Image (cartoon, rainbow, N blue to C red; front, side, top):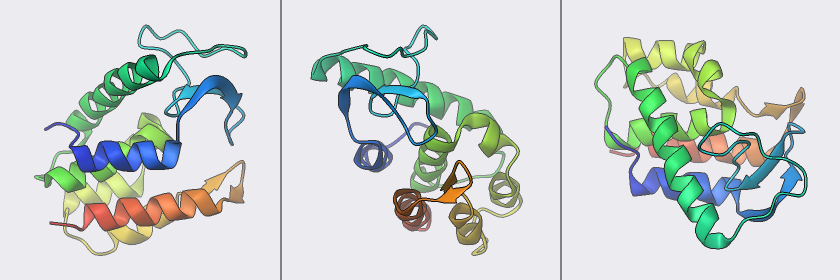
Length: 148
């Protein structure tokens, strides 16, 4: 399974694109479409700059890497949109958080469980504070997840 265009568009929409490194809401140096590291694992540093073309290339590489890391965690049969929503979640919250989440446990038990929506919604905080942007993102991921 691969990350579909709807998933890529969702990630890009919520991450936005910045060509100069900045501190994200979790206080990590970030560049491009929410990337905290480059494809070789090198972390983004303050002052880093990239072109739009490089941001697009980096996004494709990093998004594919996230999708490849989500694949083995999902043990149930999911739709392309369900997979895209889970990959968007992992891209934002991290693979480790997806791996240990009740969200993933419920997806693996029954990918059509309606309470999965509540599990997405729980992940709307950064630094212990509810962020409106994360709330909107989780709502969009939930909508995509339940779109056939």
